[in-house]
Picture 1 (cartoon, one colour):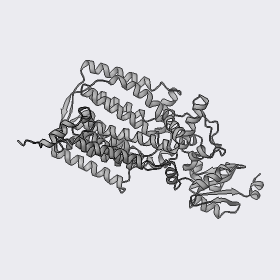
Picture 2 (cartoon, helix red, strand yellow; picture 1 turned 180 degrees about the vertical axis):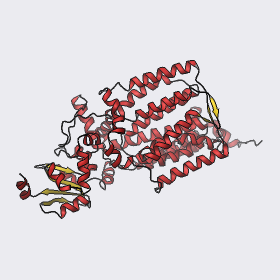
Picture 3 (spheres, helix red, strand yellow; picture 1 turned 135 degrees about the vertical axis):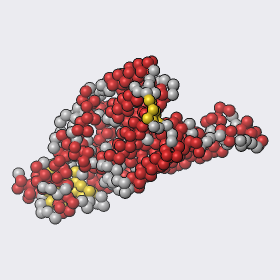
Picture 4 (cartoon, one colour; picture 1 turned 120 degrees about the horizontal axis):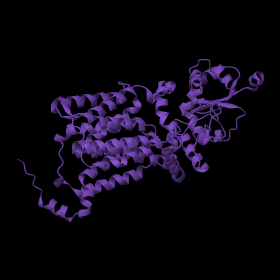
Length: 503
């Protein structure tokens, strides 16, 4: 047996450190702060996202009118058509932050949400492994996987609620029963994002895993006691009922099913719904992680609870099927990996150096403050994706005398920044797919009857990204002229001759 002897000088330093601050500046807190610093550095310093513009506009309209949106207000193609704002609650923090701090506010909410999720994953990994070092190490895998959705997205709030749910379920399994909070989580979740359906599925699997008892190789299950089963039944019922507490009633509850079964073009054409590319760096990391997990299982032959295996299967299948769900895998799969590493990573509290920890923690906080981007920096970084300030100035003074065909990714940008121009399409895909606009848009940009589509909607202007097939076509088609062009955007106008001839 090896005995750790602490030098007398270190013992004196520990005694001199204020007792209330020892835990606050302990090694586990230091690792949490370092993880938060890495996450902050990993989050792109930009607020460019195709959805954030119309999310901000939604929140602004609803706060000003004191009414929930029920119809499309922003496009000329689906103007007045039925549409529900199924993420209304998660839009509010972004809008209030923007109103208080401008683009920095949007970035602040984004970083805060991502930090909450990753620190939550660290906490879940610690619950599973009881090793803060192992939890810290596997959290870096989570950062890499979750990076697929690092940006100002309402989806982040859905993942926050998922982390909360998993924490409540883990506590219930270990005798710390605060499961009464779960219906409240679902009540907020359904109003924030459609990912609540994943939470209900996981809750069902968790409950079902305790309805049997047995052992199957490395997998085991323990039946719930009668009080536990009764509590889970009530909580599951109340959680299910809670999703109907929303401004749109059953229509909002059906939205995830509409996405899964009716929005075929959305899922087939949006990048984040595509399968994981195993030739990409992220895909290779996923394969390496799965291989490491299998190898560790062969070495340790750990025992798995049935609900853990079910969660692993859900997370792995979702991530391999849709790259969007790599974030889901980071939450569901990564915490379980920490237990396999825990035996090699013990933590000795008596070796803590609180003064050194405090200095590193303070330095990390100072680094975040110094590196926090300004509004100008955020706008500059977004200019490579969206029109820059010069283009925006031109567009804000642009009052079209006819319909404008715009780039899909710029729809939200125009809705927020160029309000006098009704858009052809934006990333609220459901309303456009339901009314046939998305199919026509895809035909136009793929040079399949492009000119016919422009004629169908009486398009007078085309605002698009430079160097795209559609812009090349219009540059070499008589009847169109360039009104404006810069390194990012180009604005075409139909000539009067053709417009009058069409009339």
